[in-house]
Length: 428
Image (cartoon, rainbow, N blue to C red; front, side, top):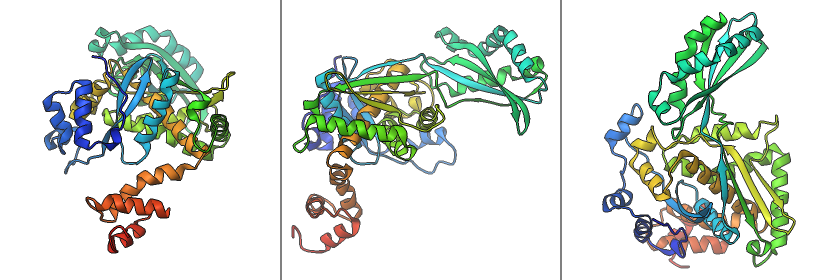
């Protein structure tokens, strides 16, 4: 089935009409449409089996970003998020990117690290060589714990050993099991392998194994995206495309040199990525941790994206970052809406999902930088945020639209302003 991701005038439709359109576009069944249309898609019994001390379920708005074209394929992207303007910005930047062929993505293999910490060793460098001497034996031992993964072509591939000769607790060595986890996020797999080899590692080194746990700095599991915009594509009624491009590049350079700006810059990237991760039932905390650690890998916190000017004047953006996501296991399998999100995107592998996520992050980043470099972030964002303010002030039905218009016209988007407006005459 060929999916068409262009969604013209989609915002003007009712939620019911939007759902009907998406259902037809991606081939959702009547049962699947009913799941999306009704609150409480996650049964309490299922939720109770997912985590402890369950008392209910908590819902977020589920939207779709349109216009994404990734490696020549149209993709409709589900996003679960509470903040206004995120979906609109990502969709608009994706729409502008289509002229240049959309987003081009790639990724490394799905390799995760399991760390085995060894303490109480008097000869850490000798212990390192001892582990490496027995590497094949340890790899075989690790792989004996997951025959299913081996059958799928995954498994422990290599072992690295890192030496920390002088810590406050004495010498420490850390063995890394490098594991191909296929289409899983991989935490359970690598943790099990690390625990299973621990006893043999103690015998080999004469030390004591402490922690046996995955690393969320998944620097061997990277996803990348690349996009290109011509100047005329980025032009606004007030700014030429060349001015916008110069402003975007200067905003990026600010983030590249200043960690205070980089933190907000990267948060904007994660504004696009996290909603995709949440919608698919993946571990957004793991993705966040890996992203920010990766941004600090040079010893200084910096931007996850780059923006530069091509020889012909086009704006070129790139992103590369860890993307430890999966299609199997955990909430991705147990949450019914997570399964539907994957179906809407028509993803076939965890690597493809990771590539879609970073493309959305790159689009979201440009949406923020373009606004910052031109009219400022508040004009567009606050216009969308005004609906939240109106609802918080108690507006319902037709009152919402006129209160929103009144706040925008007054350039005063505050709850107390909305409350005051609601208390007065309508349309005043």
